[in-house]
Image (cartoon, rainbow over all chains, first blue to last red):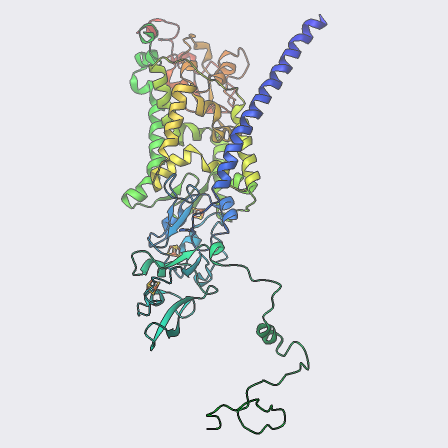
Amino acid sequence: MSAATRIPNAIDRRRFLQDAARAVAGCAVAGMFLGQLARQARALPAEALRPPGALPEPEFLAACLRCGLCVRDCPYGTLSLARAGVDGAAVGTPFFTARDVPCEMCDDIPCVLACPSGALDPGLTAIDDARMGVAVLVDQQHCLNALGLRCDVCYRVCPAIDAAITLEQSHNARTGHHAVFMPTVHAEACTGCGKCEKSCVLPEAAIKVLPTRLARVAAADHYRLGWEEQERAGAPLVEGIIDLPDRVPDLAPTAGAGGFAPLFQLPEAGQ
Amino acid sequence: MSAATKPRVNAASTAARGWVVAHRYLILRRLSQTVFLGLFLIGPWFGIWWVKGNLAGSMTLEVLPLTDPLVLIQSLLAGHWPALTALIGALIVGLGYALIGGRVYCAWVCPINPVTDAAHWLHQRLGLAKGWQPKRGTRLWVLGMVLGVSAATGTIAWELVNPISMLHRGLIFGIGFAWAWVLAVFAFDVLVSRRGWCGHLCPVGAFCGLLGSASLLRVSAAGRAACDDCMECFAVCPEPHVIGPALRGSGSAPALILSPDCTNCGRCIDVCAPDVFRFTHRFNRRTGETSAPQSPAHTRSGASRAA
Ligand code: SF4
Ligand code: SF4
Ligand code: SF4
């Protein structure tokens, strides 16, 4: 009697354990594939820029619902949702390609207002604070300004002109008597809107918006810049620092106090 | 051919009550599926922006936010605390489905349902074998796996592969190669496993089932006294195991279908010539007396089945 009741129980238990083990094993395999996909999804291609206010990529993938409300509320058709197997960004997430349609930096930031999830940080209220990437003059061989011409297009279209991008003058060594007006991006003011990349006149943009992770490096913490420290402190950092005399060749034949007598006289000296 | 020996499902009910009555819930479901997809499509197609977004998250008439609660749960597990709009949206959707039955989503809204229904139709036409039939709890394991991967990788993991959003988002925002997912589900259901996707694996369906396990809206086999054992309901039901306890219970045992797996699709109501099934609420425990007088003509007649 007891054997008769025990055996079915044992069989049941055995079957249950077998089923559970099978399910766990199956899910472990499927889960590994899914996990692998999830890791790969983080590799955002450099040309795919996230909308203004997007959280850093790992957090963004935890937050974005892929609803496309930001896409819908962008008045310029800048954004689109990544299509499976076509666009490089994680499938269904919003991105834009600066060379196609850059961000026009709307004052009211409708994309951020539309986002229900907080994947686009509602704390971003001034579009100038957006950091979608950083423009970099990637090809100084072909940039027309770098060649000494006056294209200036990227500079002129920049919504943060003279802050995010300036034209830095230097001597044109080729002609010997002209200036080079080098487009120079100042990362701390660049929003990464991509208008410069969009409007570069070359067949392929010589200036490109890159993701911040590629375009910038962290400052070296162990290295202090003396002039900044001094400005911050409002005074020299070390009191009573000895200011050694500058050793300029004194061309006058007679040396006063603190001066040096020259070892030799230049022929035309003392003009 | 099997078609010659076995009358097509729903033949008896159609003969007895006419095509429209015998397909009324099917028609309503297809209509509802079309409307739910259409509301999202009239924006991009015709510029009528009543509804923006997709099933994962949407905004209706600029006031009503809706969020897929399963996506939101994955987001929470991935370590993100969502903004208020998404939370409210998920609460509305969650409460709604908890009330009318989570799997109402499966039968009335989900865009994959017509795909797997078509696959099942083809499967039947071809007279194929059942194929792989995973255990009943499998989809719960899959759901657990999805939540686990979301937590472990810090991403909304299921949305990377979810064929539902692939299709729905794809139709609205551009599909890319997402149709391959849909095709895969179709092929899986036809060739590998009868009713395999929606019936056994889909974690969204599993979640919907859990969500609606105490739902108000229920199908009841209230007229079970009139059942003539034609087995049409079992043949047509996508989750046939839910019918047994309600239909075969006797005496005072409730005739309500209480399994959370029931999708509230109403197919059993459509195909039942003796009109055994009806929609009701979960506190309606009456059986028999309401339906018995209505359908004496074609119950237990056998003639209606032969027709
Ligand atoms: S700021 Fe304006 S242009 Fe830029 S992505 Fe947002 S909505 Fe579009
Ligand atoms: S609105 Fe927010 S949640 Fe929706 S797709 Fe855009 S970033 Fe993602
Ligand atoms: S638009 Fe292009 S070519 Fe012209 S200055 Fe800028 S980077 Fe150089």
